[in-house]
Length: 279
Image: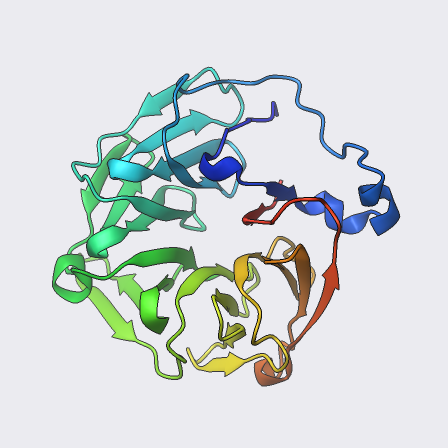
């Protein structure tokens, strides 16, 4: 598979997970861990990109950004790309593929929540989303491992779970236990345990268990977390990045999610982490 290189607004640093598996001393020596053999530019100008998501099979990439921008790129042949029509001018902050890889959810400003369909590259508003989410700033979305529920995070501690049945009926449920800080990112572990991790601006890190209950990770508060990723199916571990060049390794307790913990370390890269993505 040919790698796809995307230039992100604000010079966002994409931290490849393989970096986490090499000695810290190697990272400090500024040696590259990624070889870019081909660069495909969508445009020559700043598109205000906010997020990207790779499909479960690694063959499709979606990028989203300001003024309703959405774009499809083939993960196997980056030259193949499609500009998507969202019929929306609100900024789109996050996107996540359903585990089956046929659709993806996209969320953004003013309660925008749309669905992308792979077969025809169409985008449509999710039924009921306007009534339940209008006016809210939605920063993050992630499907659980089974694809039964998607979790949505937003400003002021907003955490909502969403699902849709075969008849098109949708359900939006606000979760209890939030602490009020903005939810900046969330990621679900891709095992059948359906455990998800939330990171916030000031309240720390939280874990959502199989019963949709929120458990706050002790010692994670007081840090401005930026992003989280749960990359490995076989390991109950997630990774988060934060201000002041901090990396958090979140060890999940599958049997008792409330006992999950985080170990943080400082990584001198000479810049601030703004995002993390599994290659």
